[in-house]
Image 1 (spheres, one colour):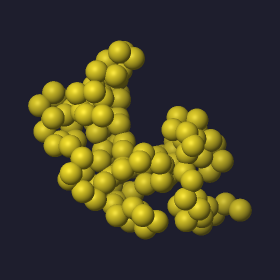
Image 2 (cartoon, one colour; image 1 turned 45 degrees about the vertical axis):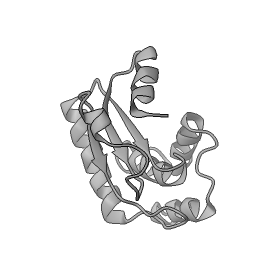
Image 3 (cartoon, one colour; image 1 turned 180 degrees about the vertical axis):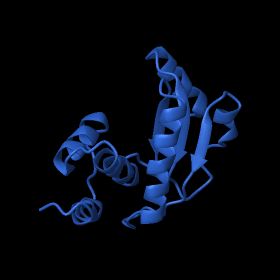
Image 4 (tube, one colour; image 1 turned 90 degrees about the vertical axis):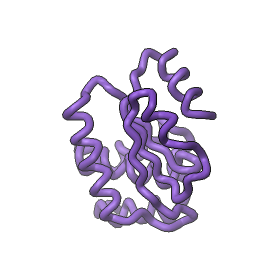
Length: 136
């Protein structure tokens, strides 16, 4: 699945991608210039993955970045990915839904699971979200 494939798929869905947030710790998956030369902004936030809970400073930076981007370009879509698109991405997106859009933890988890099945599956990430948001 290449950047060109991503853009083609989104165009077919009538979605205009404006930003890609890459949460992988590696540069091996694609060259971000493949997006930027097509007018899509790319932000790299290096997160380790493999059960390592995301750095809080990075999560806050992500939330601020998304808020600023959507204020500048409200009609554009944002793609957020890690290696598998579940735990790191889910942690960031669920945190955004709770802290910025004021979803409950349960609403945010359900929304992410519906958008990206099977949702967060690593118990360490789920437990960290519960602890972070004082649930349970």
